[in-house]
Image 1 (cartoon, one colour):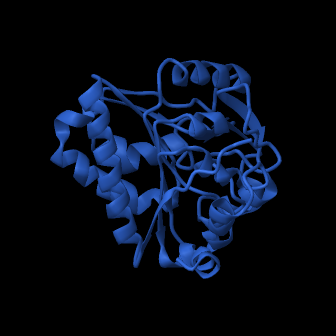
Image 2 (cartoon, one colour):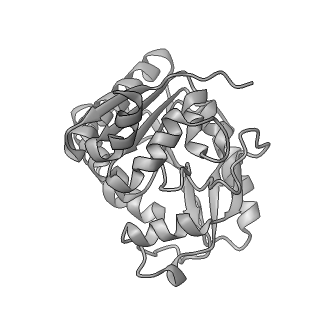
Image 3 (cartoon, helix red, strand yellow):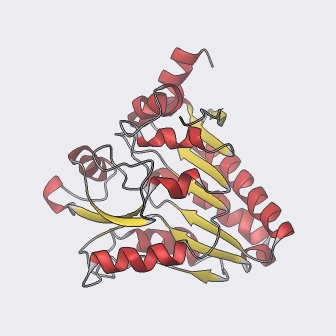
Length: 259
């Protein structure tokens, strides 16, 4: 049975304060990693929920430029079938919000337009599996998903590192709610995602989760039973997890936990 770890939880008065604190923690973890070995391998989520965190992390990285030239960057998911230059691609988001501003050692991006999504998932899984993942910056979806591990496809014992999944309708609706697509019909039905064991086995997790639409998922992730009904409970399987919330996202958790 999975041991229930207690994540470090911070509740901030604003999204900006949340983002700054998460960025400081992420930078500290990268610096600690590089004190022990010459390369740090990190994974980023790519979504509007990460805007404040990435903006603050750019400032942290600019203050520590030598550090980031020793960092290898991955991201955790990508839509299948969009053109390589689509503005909705998570690669586009990560370039615009971080990579264009911060030189790094290496960057590995998921090619959602690849002719065989299954082959691309295998290629990316092999890259991820080529060494330890030291730090992951992640979000929590409205349905409790982590990356694109929605409840119907989440597997805490997944034998794969990356896989092709069909997106749950609640997940696809979130992409509309976030303003990434104009309507449900435009949201791709398939994606490539890292699987839950990648998160469970990472050196550290930093979850950045703002906004009232995330309150139910946050409560489930931090107080509900660990399992695929709320994939974000994977946070409680990793002993080096930290969760950064604003007041809106924390509202139901704070009410029910007395935090």
